[in-house]
Length: 115
Image 1 (cartoon, rainbow, N blue to C red):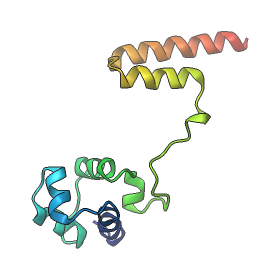
Image 2 (image 1 turned 90 degrees about the vertical axis):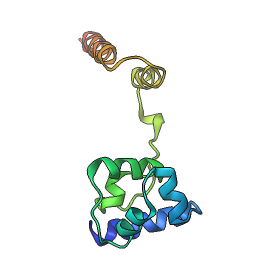
Image 3 (image 1 turned 30 degrees about the horizontal axis):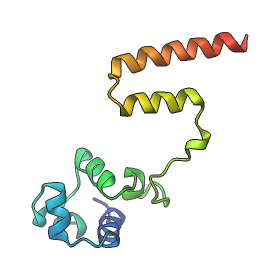
């Protein structure tokens, strides 16, 4: 793990007002493992990195130093009506297969409208 990842992990955890023990419990890991990550003694795996980003309401890009933007917020005003519908359907239990089919239908419909 890079030093920036360790620093950002510790900083964001502290910003949430959580001790290492509390945050480790929230993640379902041992506090020694979290301590090793925060002190740069152990690398975070990809799956754990995604879980950490979600728990800290940030992105993996921020945790790894690829961006300095910590917010995981997305400006939904930039989405089309169809994109917002797909997100709603995904959050409300539509299967991935049906989402792909719906996306294909919407895409072909948009292409037909522009002609």
